[in-house]
Amino acid sequence: MKYRQNIHEIIDLKPDFMGFIFYQDSERYVGEVLCKDILKAIPETTQKVAVFVNENPENVIKIKQQYGFDYVQLHGDESPSYCSNIFSEGIKIIKAYRVNKEFDFTVLNQYTGYCDLFLFDTKSKMYGGTGKTFNWEILKKYTLEVPFLLSGGIGVENIKDALELQHPGLAGFDLNSKLEIKPALKSREKSERIIKTIKKYERN
Image (cartoon, rainbow, N blue to C red; front, top):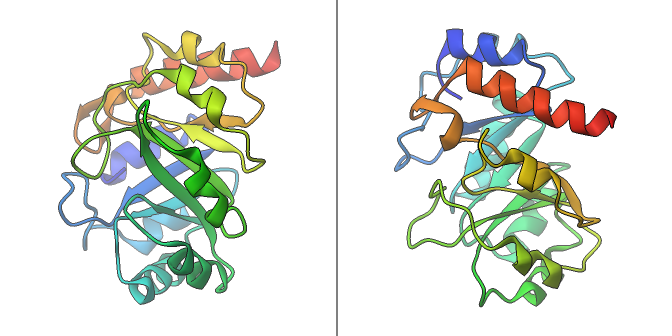
């Protein structure tokens, strides 16, 4: 998220999380445009997430404290020791991984003590999302107790398929490009449709 009016539109839909990207090479980079008062308007029921890619850990801690984020999402090549340093500051961590059929899930063992959630996205050469799905059958190889978010090309056209995944670790979905009008600008109509679909499934 990036734009004030759009943030308020999506807040009204009561998402569980709302993300803000602090990676300068991203089209969704919030930079200096993000104001503290915008974040203060977000109710506690929506967790605020700051997204970083290989950022200096001191900057991660500073930005988290400056804006009052609930989580930081690490979407780069951050090491277990890097995560340990962030975790030691009392910060909740979502660690993202870009996966394909060759991905070795055992590498996550070193991160389990420091991460509250993992996030599995589609493998690509660049950091950030591709807007494409990966073969969800791969997730059968994941057996750790840390819950995970599923990302990568999830939108209104395939959310029902995603909801049918029978994995005990699946905690939710990271939704982005498939709901966008342009980078960082979310369609209220698509966002409302997909959130209603998810919440209806949860009630059933």
